[in-house]
Image (cartoon, rainbow, N blue to C red):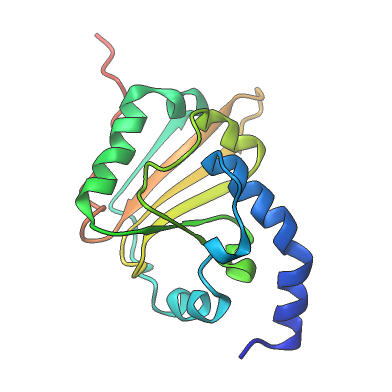
Length: 163
């Protein structure tokens, strides 16, 4: 059962949470599309928090490349079933249940304007890819891409080779 504090936090943040998720996936998102908060809390408690298997910093413009789309598709093919999309408020409102890791809007670079951190996990939270957005002193936006887990940890995003 949710505490009074949790219910108030969820109620005050839900509208913005749904708007953020809608922008990320490019379609309207309703509260019924989210994992319920009791399940969310249980999942957070059992999540795999081991050190990342790989980490790479890239320019935000990389998110709109075919290479990045292929990377998300590869993650999706490595697991069967739905995945969860987490933002900064998912611990209060619940993550979005989506069909695959590549179910996002076409302009991925625009994510930086709606979320500072995005995490996609498998339904059991044992595999994750984290996208951590940062603005440098020169105002350029970079993304740290980090993978974890037995299935996703071995799938590395690689920058295009410069010849």
